[in-house]
Length: 75
Image (cartoon, rainbow, N blue to C red; front, side):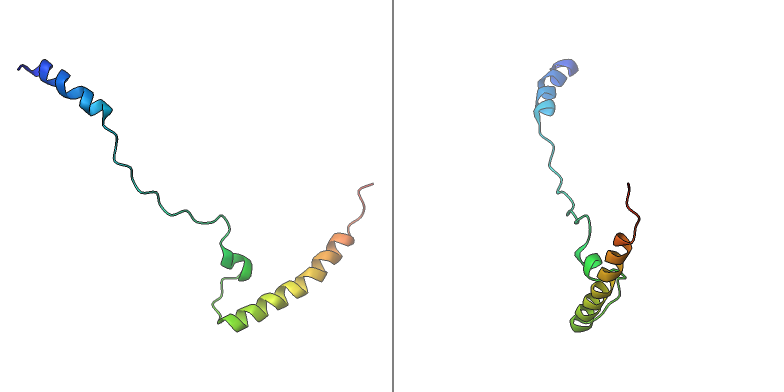
C-alpha cells in the first residue's frame, strides 16, 4: 500500500471524527447576589449584614424618592 492510498484510507475517518467536547466553565450570574445585599463588599456576620442592608435601603429610599420628585417636569 503506497502513501496516497493510505492517506485516502484514513482521511475519511479523521474528517468524520467528532472532537472531544470540552466542559464549559461554570457561568456566573451577571450581578452577583452579594453585590445587591452588600454593595461595599464588607464581611459581616448575618445579623449585622441584614441590619445594615435594612438601614441602607430604608435611608436611601426617601432620598431617591425626594430627588426624583424634586426634578422639574419635562414640559
